[in-house]
Length: 218
View 1 (cartoon, helix red, strand yellow):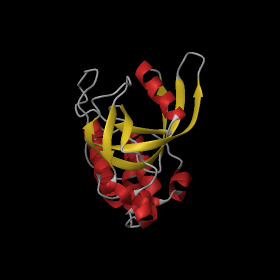
View 2: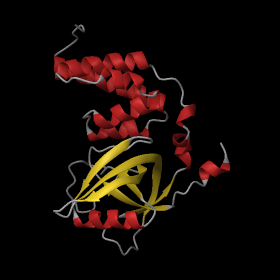
View 3: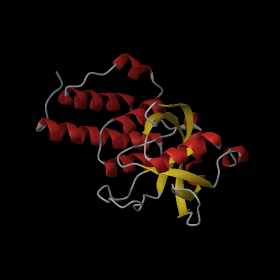
């Protein structure tokens, strides 16, 4: 891997937006509705600065603390389109770039939002999706089809079929409503192929639980 990948324009300190059950993955887009004052400040600072925000989950989804303990792995995204609403919110689109590991929280800060000292070196392969190992697309689509049929949800199968493997896996991992711990497992998967395998397992387990046991596809 080239040195340029390790020195991409990513700062060592980033603002973070903790949200339970919300996942951002490299190459995928996440729409956000920002309304809390501290995160409005964070977004305005990001717009005026590096356009970067780190998404991360609280470690305990039941923790109601103002600043709960966080998982140690998140994903940094770049702000794309954004607009202010008449009622004071900001609607933004965040595009995932690369996952990060938290080294420590910045304790001496002047911002109302939290900032983390992070490193990216463990996840530099996120910057090169073209190098990802093969994904078992047929198994993934079969598991997804069964899960959605049991849920009674229709999908645009033509669009899904046309997506690149990494984009398909990451989009599904972000959109399917798994539990926060399961979302974190998907985030921390070592590769896209490993994420696909976890995703298939979770879809199959959810289909069995919701369907009351094994049922053949119609």
